[in-house]
Image (cartoon, rainbow, N blue to C red; front, side, top):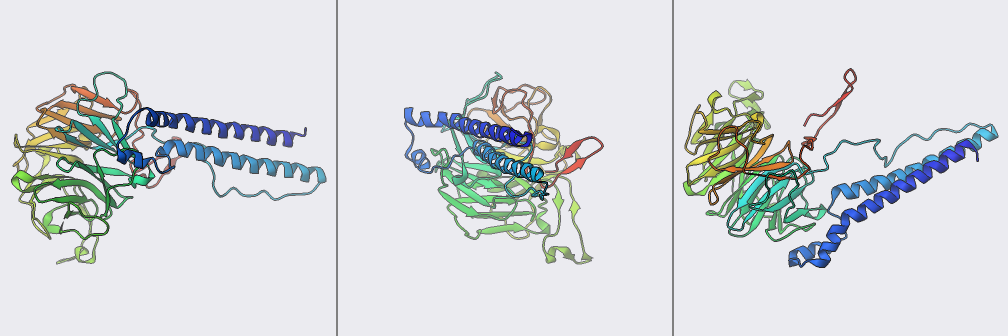
Length: 454
């Protein structure tokens, strides 16, 4: 056998093995779901989700698709090698076909495990829900799940798959009375999905609402039957009917220079005090001609100190906050999720910039220090995104974006103390890639490193 033909033959055999291996891997990954559906009863909503033949595992289908692409490419390369060998034997020249089309990557950097984002607790239903912004999912655990071992915790249910419509899932909120969970998609989804508690798998939402681009947080007002959504870049809060769907317009819009909203993220409704609290990173830029043209001419963006702003629940238009926590003593640095504890008059914030949880008095205002700070190497708090206070069980939940974990503390925890329980979504010590909607890449040839801004 001529060398070029032998090389093409070996390449074909290798691609075939890769394709077979990918198929077997897909079968074994799917096997637990197949067998579990045979041996355990499921809710009607869950059974409906199985009517589709779409697989809800992004990683599995991607791996098989890459194997198939590699197979096709190898066949094409083998054909070109054989043609080139024939041309050489005949003493003629052939043109090399440039690479193009559906090309498998030489290698990829991806996180195979969930990146936990927001958290919500329903103590009466004994449920805690966390969002996974990496693979577009919502995980449901028993409230007392987790422990102090290095083992991964198994969720009771997972909502995930192309039929769900979820992508970069940011904020979630639970309606404990109606037993529904609300999820907003940040940057790439521009929508809010609503699912019943008892659904799982690759299932369509109960309803979908289109929301402005850059949605991050979501908060329910059970008294007024409303839902509020924070919008990052336009520095806006939009409020809808709880049952809103489709392209329905909001009931109210809070936006303008007087609101002092600046890159809002976490949002929470304190229905008992008729207030809405919003966490701001402090970045502000004009997005309309009216905002750009001030009384003194054109103005650009600016950076303000991070803050937690409080408004009345009926705030709209360019309305000022009633209170604002802001200043060097607050220690606020990239404040993310918020949770309010009306029983003890406290508010907790996930402080991503300093890997800490800050707890303030609910009615605090100005440049005030927090009542308590959870921070340190023993806490397991690393890149906190979400926080939830469970007053019934006197606990505080935190989701870590940089550690594949959720950690649970006593509600009044303070300082560098170990959590009561840890929920792991990856083996202990697994590094988190930390991608969050990467928009560009750069290569540092001196250090041999790839730079990925998020």
